[in-house]
Length: 235
Image (cartoon, rainbow, N blue to C red; front, top):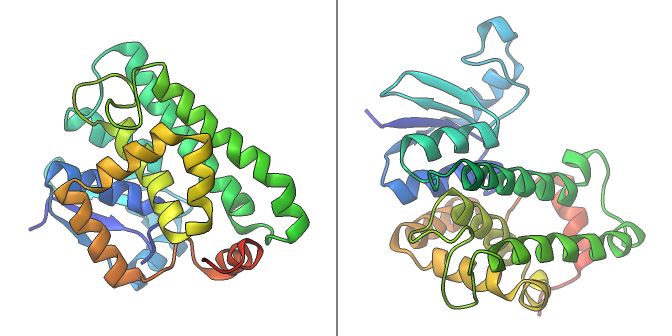
């Protein structure tokens, strides 16, 4: 039996953060079928494995834990597998970085798909996206991160904060290459970190499997189509 079962859509969006951490720790996991994911999402709360509005949902078959919400899942995996710094302030900063990443996803999908992107909306949002990049950059810089070395919170090895930052910005700029020059300009150290994390063997293998399984998709649906429309063709 696998160590974990992940309930998530076949997309490299919020569930990809969980996959990246599981890959980093060398855990085995089973991906639930789409029908099972949809069934859990639609079930009455009394019948759900854990009461939740939507995936990701993770089952730890070793501890019998059932968890939902990406930040909660990553907090659990970080604590269980030693991916938090071990200092109360830095641990809190790790959780803050996860929360920031979740906020970026929320804004990039126009509030979880509540609205579609339009040219005026994207033009108005671009400075805010640049600011998000700068916030991640300054967080890392204050803890010694550079374009070529270091980690988000000054640890000697990558932890939850690094995997999350790299998964957020690395995946986004891989799927939307038009955004990579923006990241290089506003957050060069984050761009470097994303590349270094992506080059780790476990992450390289995950990225290949994800590309084979999900193609160019990121969040999917009409919201992704509207985002691609405002970004224009990749050079």
